[in-house]
View 1: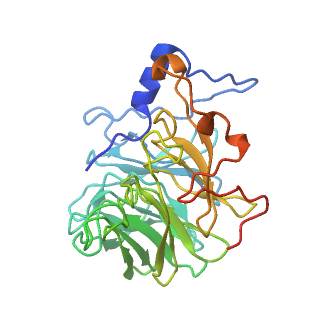
View 2 (view 1 turned 45 degrees about the vertical axis):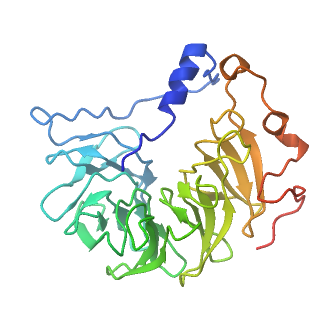
Length: 336
């Protein structure tokens, strides 16, 4: 299942009412590269980069494109920070190879870059691969779909044990996707099967390893209210659902899709693409034991909503907590 990534509809509405305006002072935007893939005249360039960049130890920026390249099914590229030295390092889509990477790359301790593709491989469920800074690609594993999951659109994270951890959004035993770990040699272990009962489904964001050694993430769907959930996963595969998003006009938010970030205060911070007072999404924080707080609701103007915003969204500084149980916002760093 494919989804439009981002808030294109919201931005279109915002453009009509004229509120989506950001003032930036003393900033200069420089275009470093314009993707100009054409199957005839420019077949080696990429097209439609969906993921962010990573800066390698050599100072170059590395990224992926979902389409383009000689097979029209995506590329890996590098570029200097001043826009020079753009090189296509890999063209996806050959028989047995993966295609259409939606996730970015990470550079591991061994100096190679690691990533996933949303499709392709020997079983059609996508691949996990490594690629050297010079463009030598190695397929580490092809996802089988039925038990291992498929459609991995989130990036990998290298754990403190040097293994790589990731998620696949579709398939698996329950049809809700999987979480897995894989060694640098390509040995894959499924850690969790999403989708059973009120478990989350369709993990679309990557995992983050917190300072307690566990991994944390979100699912786009599922949970008790069908709007996604927040979960904890140990390196050994012990999982716990800590929070279910409620969506709708509830300040709680719904359908999280982006990676979490652990702050210096120990809290995990994230966003939802839906929910909140006007259904336009939220910014939230959550502790490693599931204490959840909505920090901000993205609000459409009253002229669009037909009413004023509710206080729970318009005044987050009041300390309103919107977890599964009403509670006061902690004033100290959360315990792990």
